[in-house]
Length: 538
Image 1 (cartoon, rainbow, N blue to C red):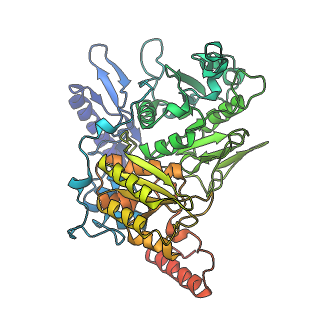
Image 2 (cartoon, rainbow, N blue to C red):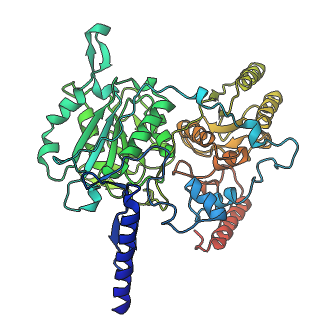
Image 3 (cartoon, one colour):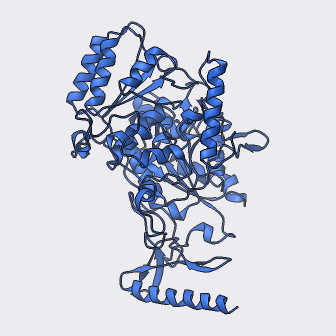
């Protein structure tokens, strides 16, 4: 009892000192009581207005820490500081291998005269190469009460209805026939807001959340969206992160998989659901898929067990960085090739909890810089390697940073194309990160299985494993755009699972025609790795 009272006294004393010292700087700390002990924790940034004597939350900026300040957390130094900066988990040995050494075995040693140094491949004039956004930032969108005081995060009061923010960029869902464009479909400004007001299920059902909708002006087609617009969406989520329980993003289907993949990486340590959705048929049509997709996206945006960027379409919830568009005319427009859906809907909602990502352990951050100097090449039989070589050399003249190749099967190209392999090796030496994807809908790149793939591996080409082309491009753009990673770290992290976008190479099944001996060796190696991690072999 004496220790309990002493802890309470210390807690009150610290709170009083902080309140007095923080008032001059305009910052107030929010305190919570733990069941086992008293401690203070910076949950929501608050600002004290001395003139009105009121406390209100502060809008958070992009590229800003969105949780506890550094001095409140345990001090992290050395290798752990590097891991915390990347937003990675110490339990992942593949990540630890990357961040604990300057280079990996697959990369060229930095002491080699032919290695790539950071000052040689990083471009300081990055702003001139950024995609110009068509969307304008929305900023803070939470509602204030009649007195002007902001109601704090919904999670501080369990009795309060949950709240969801809808960010509408346009797309088929908001379209109607435009007489000025020969009756072709075009987004209609304000149509979504008017439609939401007529949805009785949102107004009358006590289990549905409070919905706040923002329509960007002008609404745009998804084919016009790019990294600049993705940065606007990420920034607006960051500004409103602590004032809503979840977020729904309405956009067109053509580039939805790219946008969802990009935000998966831009929103680091995400602890709330971000659900992309759209439709194949506009809301104005009597028969449409837009209404169901919208309602289910709002429902999933309230789920406490979803902590990632997702896509809901037709009857399934997909991981954003695993999804790809598979059909232009059917209602099932999206699928996830190499991982099952996170949830299916029918009479009930069937969630696959084993596939959902765990809550984050580090603070939430927003990254808005995405490298745009990337190209993707899909190889076809009989391609002119001289032409491809000239194309890559020309791209290098404009400071190419990344090259994604869609290769045959498990990552193969013709063995007779030795000149093209040399072009790729020269590009890697010049500071271009070359990534190999498979053209197959399912499966993974295994460059060491065939001789042709082994030649690419020796040339410095990085395997994308079983990532989609959308995820591989967006992940590469994210890593290159961070600006705090070396060339070798970017190459190594392309093969590390950061947001659930790939299956680690150690967990992929063996390639076809593997011998019994190879399978036994593989199983033994996996068991040894699990034992070194202190876990039971699987």
